[in-house]
Image (cartoon, rainbow, N blue to C red; front, top):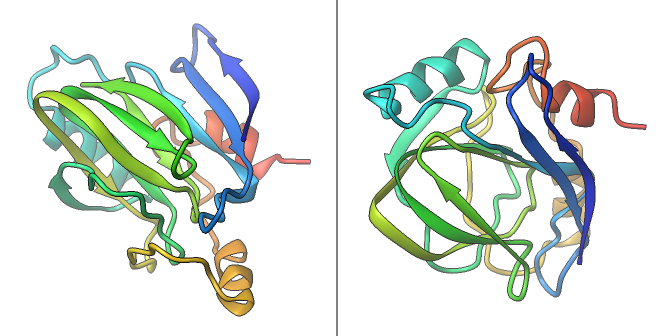
Length: 181
């Protein structure tokens, strides 16, 4: 179901994992853009992480839209790419749809989900919370069923900012989304 693309650690960049997810049942995932998980994008001890992520995402053209948890049912967004900055606590999140890959995320981590990526909160500790952001002009939806062919084509054609939500002009989005082969 998933294919590791890269496990990056560069002293000049935030450590990240990038991996592809194949379609799974009614969850389309994304056939061209990998999921990117940034580890410790912000230090969990740096104070008000929610505000810090909001400023970071806004400055990098991924305007934040809300603060909350992650839904505890499988869903995906067909009308927007999504960036989630973990502001408090920790969680296990299933990506890729039912039976998908379980990711352990904690305060300071960022999860970048291309449109179509299934996700679901499996468990959490403490007061788990994230800040959610989306490219300007994209409004998220909640999908729990297969897309029609025209909806799938529209999802695959969604644009995204030429800026990484965490690292700006450099970073995993530049490497794996903009410079994909």
